[in-house]
Each structure stands twice: as structure tokens, then as C-alpha cells.
Length: 207
Ligand code: PRP
Ligand code: URA
Image (cartoon, rainbow, N blue to C red; front, top):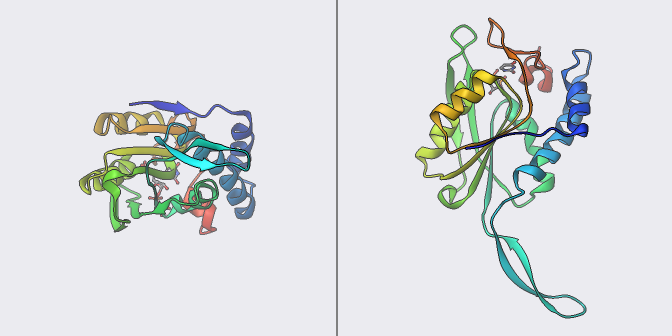
């Protein structure tokens, strides 16, 4: 189990733009795309590789190629916002979808959709969602994915609360977590403080 905070100047700069309540939907998505690319680069750093024999214009050599299929799983809705950036960096990734909606009163998520590509058992599965608040949605999504046989699962979120990180580490200690920022706490409504507000609403302009 590992928790990585991507403590990079570019990410801090872009995330500050996203957190600003005056940032438009368009600029919010643009910065999310850019951060997603940086996180995709980092979360795939240790993907298993295998030898590949090729011939350069000069001579034969043994190069490397990825030895695992990558399956990206956005948690709908807001997780969709991370897909474009990840696909720019990993164009061969297949995409699974899982729909989760938090009840505004109880904060308990409800699963409303799930569809996955074949071969999830042997793939590296990267679950993406901008927000890790109570951790309920990500925990339920990971449970669903594990029931389909996935063994190598990573969770990438933009902003996490300590409560959400603790919840994932308790339920799924084998899942590596990567965040762009670990925030202070949850407020009484289950929103991350300082956070960036409702990620889905800000991404799709539904507020
Ligand atoms: C948001 C967010 C996460 C979830 C995090 O989704 O995108 O999926 O809340 O909260 P949790 O860690 O307490 O479960 P939401 O339920 O608002 O749905 P949406 O993406 O459709 O807006
Ligand atoms: N979901 C969001 O979109 N934002 C939060 O701060 C918490 C959950």
C-alpha cells in the first residue's frame, strides 16, 4: 500500500486555478486535462515492461514495451474529466466505466452503471476520480472491480481528504493511492476543505 502526493510545482499552480471559484468551466477542464497528463505519466512509472527486439536504422537492439494492458476506470460523472488527459499519454488504454452517485444526506454512494473491457484480471487498472472525500464511492468502485478479478489496482484522485485516504487504506490496503493534493478535512456536508467544490458541477456546468 502506498500514498503518493504529486508535489510538483506545475500541479500546484494548475490546481490553484481549478480551486478558484471564479474559474470558468472551460478553464477548469483545460487545467484538469493538463494535470491528468502529469498524473498519468507518474502513475505508470513502474508499469511492467518486457523486452522487444527491433532494428534501428543502425543496428539490432533489445528495446522495451509495456507488458500489461492498462484499463482506465473513471467513476462517473466527474471521473470522465480525467479520461482525455490519460488517453493522450496512454492511447492504448481501454476504458471501463462505473457510475456512482452520493446521497447528499447520508453521503452513501449508489452504483448505477458498470461496464468493463475483457481481460481485467491481468490488467493494470487505474481508477480515476477528481475527488476522494469520505472514500465511499472509490471503495465501492474498487470492490466492484475486484469482484471481476482485478488484482493490480491503482487509485488516482486530484484532491483527497484524510478521511477518504484512511477509508481506502482500511478496505483496500493493496491499492496504491496517488493524489495531487491532500487537503485538511471534510466539512459537515461531506465536502473537502478547502477542496474545489463539486467537481462534477464545475466540470459540466450543472451548478
Ligand atoms: C463526487 C466525486 C466522487 C465522490 C467523492 O461524485 O466525483 O465520485 O463525490 O465522494 P466520496 O469520497 O464521499 O464518495 P458525486 O457523487 O457528486 O457524483 P457526480 O460525479 O455525478 O457529480
Ligand atoms: N464530491 C465533490 O465533488 N467535492 C467534494 O468536495 C466532495 C465530494
